[in-house]
Each structure stands twice: as C-alpha cells, then as structure tokens.
Amino acid sequence: MGKEKHGDDASMPAEIGSSDPAYNGYPISKHRSCWIHVVGYLRGCRKKISKQELCDIKLTAPCFLDSIQSRARSNRRFKSKNSIFKLKNKLDSGSFECYLRTIWSRFPEDKQTLFTYLDCQWFAWYRKAYYRKKFLSWIKRKEIFSKTYVLVPIVCWDHWSLLIFCHFGESLQSKTRTPCVLLLDSLQMSDPMRLEPDIRKFMFDIYKTEGRPENKQTIYGIPLLVPKVPQQRNGKECGNFVLYFIKLFVESAPGNFSIEDYPYFM
Image 1 (cartoon, rainbow, N blue to C red):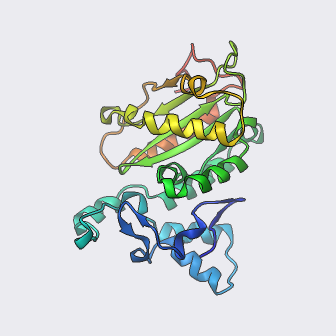
Image 2: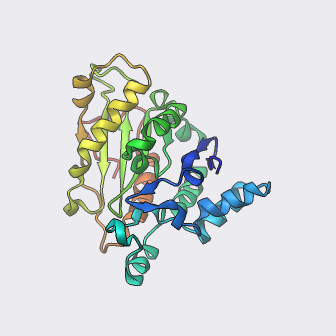
C-alpha cells in the first residue's frame, strides 16, 4: 500500500499494507475497516480523493491502532465490546486530525508562519524502532528548526497530551530565546513525566537527524516544563483538551517565548 499523505507529508508508513507489521502485538492485516485501508483500496483503484473526502472517510472509518491492546500470541484479538465502545467515545486519531486541520485553517497567516505541527500518530510510531528512521526523515521535511514553535500531539497508553517545542532553532546558550519544551496534560494525576525518557530520545534523534552541532548532554539539558493547565472531568475528554490547548497557545504565544513568565498563555 502506498503512503497516505497529510498535506505534503505522509501520515502512515509505506510498509503498512505490504509487510503487515504488528502494532502492540496485533497484526495490522486484521484491522481492515479503518480509513487507512479504505483510502488504500480507493487509490489502488486509481480513484482521486480530495482533502475533504479524506477527512470524511477518517470521521466515518476511524483508526484504533493507537489503542489496540495485545494478548498472548496464541489468542490475539480485540478486547471486549465494552472496551471498544469506550474507545469509540474518545477522540480517535482520524477525527483529531480533521478537527486540527479545521482549527489550523482559521489561524491568521502570521500565526501559521511561527508554528508547525506533526501528525498526531508520529510520536507513537516513532517509539517503534522498526519505523523510527522513516518517521525521522518525514519530520526533517517539516523544517522545525525554522519555526518558533512546533506542536506535537501525543497519543500514548490511550491518552492524549500535547508537546510543544519552543525556539529549537535558537542557540542553547541564548539568554533571551531559550529553547525549551512544554508538556500540557489535562490529566496530570496520570504522571505526564513518565513520557520524559521517550521525549528526550525523540528530541536527541531530531537534532541528530538534522546534523545539528549540539551534543547529547546539551540536548538532554533542554528544560522540560509541565505547566498547570485545565483538567478534564472524565476519561473521555483528553483529545478535546489537546485541541483546546493548541487553540489557546497559538492565539496567545508571542514571537519570543519567555520561560520566566509561563504559563501566561493559559
């Protein structure tokens, strides 16, 4: 199956229809009704798909790969119908991307030039070593070191949070535009810092892929801040809160972010 595009960027690995890798121990060949396979079939039939049609397909055929739970090798299957129902009541990755594109299109051009954002599944797939090199090459195309802010929606362990890279193009020794990372989590009782090892490695690999001169010790020293943000009332709202955080941050963040004054943007 060919690469599924998101704008000018691929949103899923090209290998997924052909090599049939396992995600969380579950064979992707058993997951044939999601938008990824629907779009792959249509394109295989040489049918053109507009961005709006792609958005509609994602909303009607959501993908639950990020939430599939694995069992023993002898009995791999989805969990009970109740578990699937719970997933359906959360914001899935396809719906999230459609809503994010709608929000993004309403930001003024001067805001859009300061920001870029990564596909919401990239961080989760980066954590799988098999795809890491491919996703890093896609991230490189985003030219994040030319942007003031990079928004990285994260969905891990069936929970959404938002990572924001600030001033990554600036010198790590800068006193006025200091590179830093914000982690916004609407369920802080779940311990958002459990993601820190993966986030640190993710940052280091991005710098390394770009051929930047900074060493590992310096990159790992970039501040990772977890500001207090509005908290969700139940277990279903985390994806909506991430969209809410993105809207607030883009609207309020200045051209020069200050660690000392954060989180004034909330």
